[in-house]
Structure formats: C-alpha cells, structure tokens
Image (cartoon, rainbow, N blue to C red; front, side, top):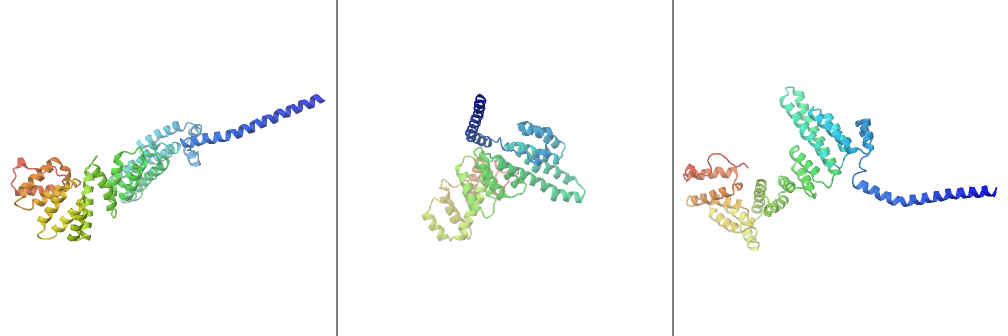
Length: 380
C-alpha cells in the first residue's frame, strides 16, 4: 500500500516537473519567436494573407500551393496566364491574373509594373485602335469616354498600390509619374511623383531631370522650377536640349518680372550692389529695348552680362542677333552667329534659324557657305 502511494506521488511529481519545464520553455520561446516573426515580416514572408478575394480567383491547387509556401511558383504560373490572356486581348483576364500575381508577391515591383503597363498602355492602346476603326457612334463614345479612361485608372491604381508595397524602390513612383504625365497631362502631379521616385537610393539620374522638366511646366511655380532647373544647368554634367530650353524660358520669366517691378534706375542700383547677378543686366537690356533708341544701350548691357562666366550660352545668341540689327555690324554678327551654330546648335531655336536665314539672304551669302540650306531646322 505504501509502495503504491509512493509510486503515485513519484508519477505526479514527474508530471508536474514536465509541466513546469514546458511552461518555462514556453516563456523562453516568446521573445525568440517574436524576434523571428519580426524578421519574417521585415523580409516579406508575412505579407500575404489569403483573403476571400484571392481564394475566389485562385484554383484549389493554386490556393493550397500559395498558403503552403509556393507563392513564387504560383505567381509565376499566373504571370504566364496573364501573358497568354494579353496575347488573346482578353483584358478582363489580364487584370484578374495580374491581381493574383501582385497579391502573391506584393514586394516584387515588376509584377506591379507589368500590371500597370497592361492596363494603362496595352489595353488603352488596343481600345484606341478600335476607336479609330469603329463606325458606330455609340461604341466610339463608350470607348473614348468610359473604357479607355477606366483602363488608365486601373493602371494608375496598380502603380500606386505597388508604390506602397515597395517604398524603397524608384520604379512604381516613376510609373505613376509617367501615367500622370502621358495619360492625364498633369505636370504638377507628375512632378510630385517623379520627385518621390528620384529620392530612392536606386533611382537613375534621369528621373530627377523628369521632375525638373515637369515642374517647369507648372503655371505659378516658375520661381521654384527655376531654382531646380538652374541647379541642373549650372551643374553642367548633362545639359539636355530640354534643360537648355527650360532654362531659357524660365530666365525669360524671371527677367520679365524684374522689368515689370523695377525701373532702369532701380535696376542700375541693384547691379551696383550685386554685379554678379547677370539677370539684372538682362532685365536692364530689355528695358532699353522698349525705347526707340535703346538698342546701343541694350548691347552694352549684354556686353557686361557676357563677361559673367555663369551666364548661359544662349545670351551670346541673343547678343549676336541684336548686333545684327545694325547694317554696319551685320556681317561680323553673322560670323559670330555662324560660329556659334556650328559649335553649339542646341542653343538655336527654329525662329532663330529663320532669322539667321534672313540675314544670310540680306548679306548675299553663297549657297555653299550658308548655315541654313532650307532643311534641318531645330524645333522648339
């Protein structure tokens, strides 16, 4: 009897000991599992939750595979199905399959990029083609006013959602900027998204230039745009034709503002205080050109401006055309303009080439010596 009691006590003691060990081990595991879970979330292994929408779109095998750890494989299969639907121009299926791939791998930016492209560009282009060939007025109205805008919006939504999932990448904010620029013709929103894209560590330099270009198109933001564009221009690493044209247009805006708000005497006083600001000399020249006999004074203002090493090259072009107004100095001005056009044709606009052609005609320049031979004009 006593031995039986001792055995039961020993048995219960072992059970209690096991329970105590398990409880202790459970408490020890809590911080370890919490740390592991945080790491899994950090690297995207806890991103996807199989909601009802995804369950409805996936086949049973695909759903089980997705929750069983084969998300990448299942996503690849549906990526191929989206491509097949694209070949068949089945845009509803393309959209459905792209939703699955982005849901399964939300941190893979390429899936979002393809989805946005298929909607805002491929489907849009398909229906635009149908619009051109349709002879049904009702169908044309539906395509133009409903279907095409709807697919652009779908593409925009894919890109914006992708940007949320991949905040470290430049790609999706750039795509949003592209859509606002090319599909909505909204330079302000395009500039905002290009700027956001340009701040990513992997962003190519051309995205910031796209930001500057679209900011320069925003009415009422010329001064802010001038600060951005002038920094790019003065940096001098890459002076694209667009940067050159934006720089000149924005400087014209700044000069006109100076002319409207200051007299000749005020501008002269400002030049004495800040002689390094060549815009003041350009504004002074514009003031002189408004008077009947101010051409010579304007030329002198430009001479001072051109001594400033920071002044853009297009002021030399302006100076050359100004000097060419005088018949006595027209030939020397032409030689200056010809030399500039030969070395830096980017600073000449179409209207400049038309004017240069008139000077050549006035001077009876032989055809084989002419700069302008009737073709090759540079467009604004």
